[in-house]
Structures are given as structure tokens and as C-alpha cells.
Image (cartoon, rainbow, N blue to C red; front, top):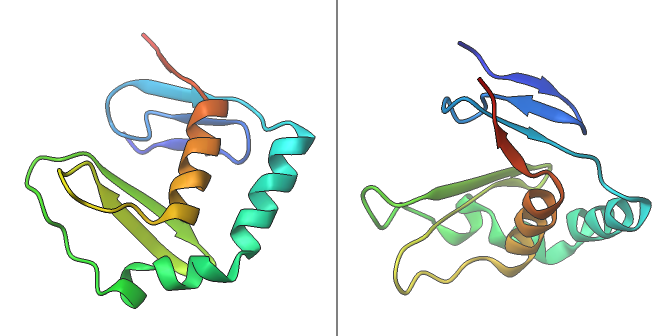
Length: 102
């Protein structure tokens, strides 16, 4: 089954695990997201700019696709996460909680 995405509102089964993420950002969060996406440092955090390669097998991998490019990171011991992309991911995940659907 392909994930169903409703931009800015909901993503059904995005990870193929039956979980739906829902939520909307407040005006304050939308403004912060726009600031982060416009941050010039984000271009230096892309996989291409960092020459990123995966470091761990079986680790949780986070990917953020922006107009600057793809930014990936993994939950690996010692891996430094790109700070702007990490803040974006936290902003989005904290405000769009995942709920198991049946």
C-alpha cells in the first residue's frame, strides 16, 4: 500500500507500519519552519555537501527533503546530526504525533 499524504495535515502509513501522523503547525511554528528552511546553513547540511554515507546497519535513518537538497542522519553512536535539519525534524515530529490506526 502506498502512503497517503495530505500536505500539512496527515500522512497515512508513511513508514509502512500502519501508523498515521497527523497535526498542523501553529502560526508560530510555521514561521519558525520557514526561517529554518531559509537558513543558508541548511545547504551545507545536505548529503551532497557533506559527502554523507550511512554509517550503521539497522539504525533509524531520518531523511529530510528540502529545496536545498536531501539531508540524512542516523541514530548511530557518535554521529553528529546536522543542526538546522535536526531542528526542522524535531519541529515537525513534535507537532504531528503518530497514532496507530487499525
